[in-house]
Amino acid sequence: MGQLLYHYEKFFVDPVSYGQISLLQLGTSHCKSGAVISEHAHWDYFELTVVTSGEGIVETNGISVPVKRDDIYVSFPLDRHRISVPDNTTMHYDFFAFFVHDTELFGELQNIILQYGDPTKRVIKNGQLKQLVSSAIYEMSEDKMLKSAYLETLFRQIVIQIIRSFSNQSSTAAVPVNKDELCYQIMGYITANIYSIRSLQQITEELKYDYTYLSKVFKKNTSQTISDYYNLRRLETACTLIRETDLSFTQIAAKLNYSSVYSFSKAFKKHYRIAPMDYRKSVLAERS
Image 1: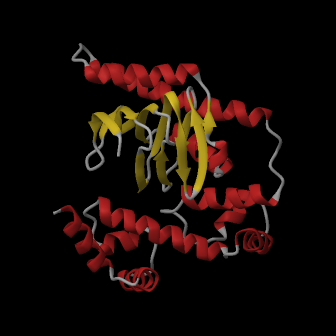
Image 2: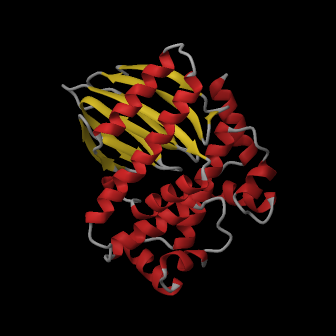
């Protein structure tokens, strides 16, 4: 409610590639007092929320983060994301959602996911990045010579500025040693590698801790096991794939490394109390 949204491009079903960056959406949102952008699940894309005026609240995975003018909030793949504007205020923001195919840039972004799983640490300030997003929106609205080539350059600069912003933060921050930080790193690793994890022992190779120690720390601090968290994220990702793609259940099961479509369906029904097929039918019914 109370939101005026301008999408210059919206390609969730069929992203458009500009070089090594694929665009899902780009635009501007003007939110009135009390506006709410309902919770939605990210698939495997990043998104910037660039606050140009006013203030609001970005909620990620149940954690609320206040944002104000000149703040840039970075959302990660598989986040559950919601934006709200308190009464008696407004918020205007630009947004940019994208995939990265470049191996070097993707690796740097994965490192950011590992280090900044805590949503309260996702706010960056970068005037150049803010201007680049604004320039991309303007360019998208115009019909100019070499538009695609120019956008390709802009999008690559945006991604590099994101990486540099987090790099600047980490260079002045203390090395994370507390157990909460370690749990966020575990969550970040699982999120970043949800499609490639075949054994949770892979976490020990990345974080350089014994798995037994990691399990004890994670259980004590989150009240759930690493395995429980991983399985929950797999099922949440499966829901997103069912809602937002035409992949078969066999393809989804394979993509998320289930041993078979039967084991996937059994886990899905046990957790959500509905079969994957019935869930897809309900989603289609809502859209019709």
